[in-house]
Length: 198
Image 1 (cartoon, one colour):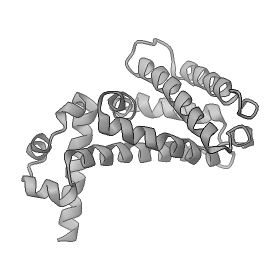
Image 2 (cartoon, rainbow, N blue to C red):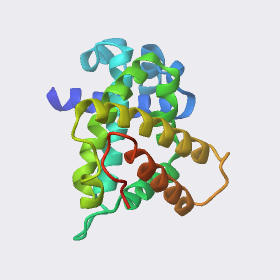
Image 3 (tube, rainbow, N blue to C red):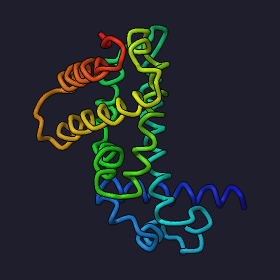
Image 4 (tube, rainbow, N blue to C red):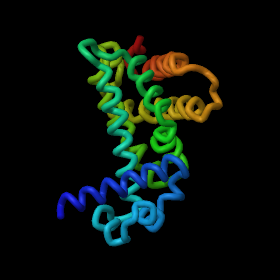
């Protein structure tokens, strides 16, 4: 029974991810997801309290994949900030629906906006151990400064990656990674922060 319930949850997540990445949050309703998954509504509520809970679960699932994608490229040598940013670009390039889920839909959906905003500082902190000392030493220790940095950095990188993933910024992945690294260096060097990452 537990295995079947877990399988149904994965089915619902798969459909939710496909709908969110293709048609946006407005397409992710309980009925639409159940219809696509071939499951009755009672099975939806077996796994999720609400449509919003499914949206958050899909977001977290894709974000976890991004973190694993970044970490898998570390090897013996620590990643540089630019390595991390290029791996982010690679993740979105492999499947542009991922960019829609993590970057575009939080701009359009209140649930995802709040969830994404709450996750950004934790996401940046989770990245810090993956990179060398040049970024670890530059990130502010003060919680207030970290909140400001997360907000500004998140906004700048979301805009850059979205324009690129949507095809409006006609440059290669390496160029995007270079630009993103410059953005990180400039913003980490804001007043109240440590010297910029190189």
